[in-house]
Length: 124
Image 1 (tube, rainbow, N blue to C red):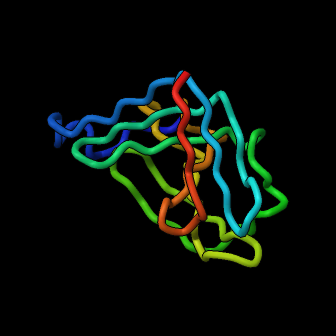
Image 2 (image 1 turned 135 degrees about the horizontal axis):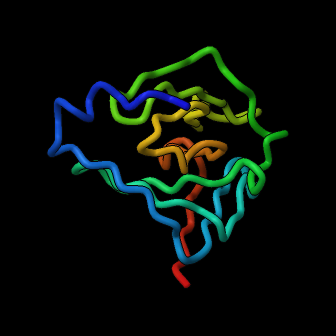
């Protein structure tokens, strides 16, 4: 199990809320559907725009290529990145060992809206 992020105790006003999304999320890039799911998670963090996390099982992993790029969030953990084959670099991120507070996002992917063709969100 991951340890809680160091930011949790120091910034109680910083919230990260993960909830199941009741609807469908479709991500397109390079004219193809890269992900299509009815099992997305909605992550709302502080004042940032909400982000939809898609299960890897509903994404075309064959269209993604892992990169060496990594980032760290004191509230979620270390993020790994993927580029779109034949497309944008580091367009996708994933927390493979997220902190316990956001464990739900493990095995999920998030996509930068400005690096893919579209992210269609269809509430039920």
